[in-house]
Length: 355
Image (cartoon, rainbow, N blue to C red; front, top):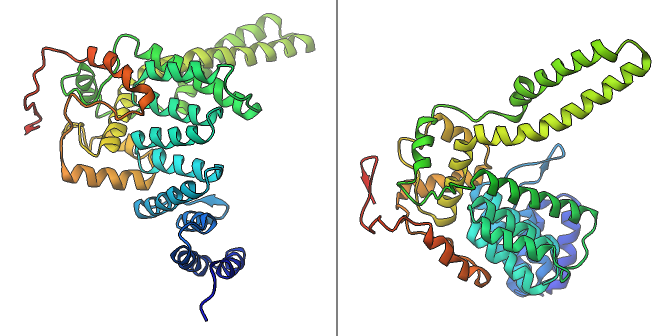
């Protein structure tokens, strides 16, 4: 006699707890065939489709694993709107592993339909908008996030809100006069990236030891010479050095971003290619030392999907705009003003390949 979905679910839970992943996953699949609305079974499929922990560390999923998990998560939130774990995991897969930025904006907008006063969806949307260079849209979301209409966040939520606020301010400041639009094949930032393509970005650790540490050391040495002759003086010098390190590090962060601007620009181009499924990076930059360095910082599924996009080779029109949820449609008029009206919508030659 065929078992019911609930009887199979009990068996699946026992197998999962015993660490028999494949058997538990097979039972979960059987359950959703019997009851397609069984959100817990869909959640098990989503979770077990991803690689298990290896020595306490999360193994990065392949493209197939990430796509399978996301497909199951869509069914979870369809039948269980309040499953916060599913929303968070789906958002991470969309952005970090699959690079589907526009899909991510829509994903979190659906969450907002469920919990309109929740801060987390706004934080996630702002992060994506910054990566796409949509600073005005990010600013509007930021204002809403700090409005009285939103529910009071916990300490972790407050830290997230402050972090994303600083991200918007710093990113907008860095590109105040020159927002990089990767879809525009004639944007002057492409020439800068081309010149710097043989250089890897400067790592924060290297920058710390070659720029921040020497400054703090020199000033600390002077302070030690002047007031470090006693125990009180030694303590005072310690706090001087600590304060200097914090201040210099804060100001040096902006300098590091400027030095790595070419790498950050290329990073945005990678996000645009992944979001659209079309290429905009010139062939002589793709495969360069800079390109490989930036791609090496992404998860395997991201790199695997990007390789497939590059193989197809469909080029992105310079008039491309992100497919945004309804709350940002009006903002596209401002984006249109940034496009050079002198450019005609004709095929553009780029590195010997025509659009």
